[in-house]
Image (tube, rainbow, N blue to C red; front, side, top):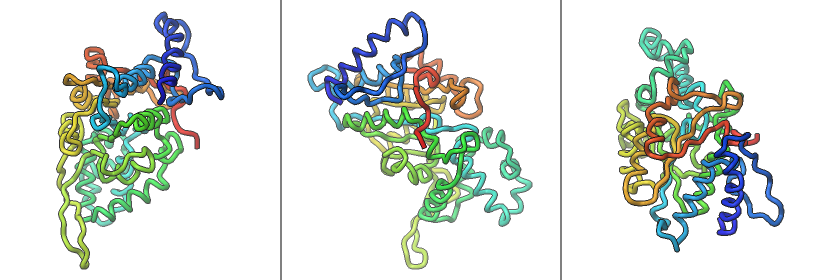
Length: 343
């Protein structure tokens, strides 16, 4: 983005700031720029402090004349996936995939009808899926897909994602992405940031759609991972999925995954739940300029409203920590002019 564009955005936000600070009225909706105006990099955001905080930070770290300049090689931004980049209600997309896979495989496993959590999943108990949490889902994925090659798993997930729809919104899961966050990722990449997905979801599952959906290539996906084994099969070398979890990339596992896969501490991190707390703390520790944000689900009419008591995407400790550490809170209802991309 040009200096003129940054200046125009700063001027526009300053003019709205007194109204926001005084608590008078709703945030102003952004309008389409005229032919003489710079293109707005975040058109789905309202004129609110969270938007301005993102723009201001990017302006500071990309200004080679300033004291906060960060070389392009060190401009690492990490994003949680579920609840940060796409919808996680009524359940995680990978959990829905798992339920469908368990139902398809159930005839070969009659014991599942008597074994938890398989029994609850087979009868459609959504609460049981939520109660399993990220760790339970990751363990179930490892158990149910053991013996499958990584290529076969990817093809199975790809076929499922092509038709599966979110039961609340009636959209394919890939169409339940958050348009404002897609804009943030694109904006960062235009400013020489490298964007990574760091998720409690399975890395193999995420890599199927991350590039086409978010513009994030497979090698920039960090997720929970099961162990795999290399072996020849029918004369061809393959990787076989094993029934063991190698890394749970959630909570304290996220900084570990970042260290393993990236090797650099991010200077920007975006999350939405307590599972992202350690990642945000890791990103905002140290002497370099840093930025952290939490997407707060407050929009019951357009998406969902939940935080401290939720069984999916619980935001409690991290919400409290945000006030202590000065992290940016993105209020979905107030800050976003639109939620999902147009179909």
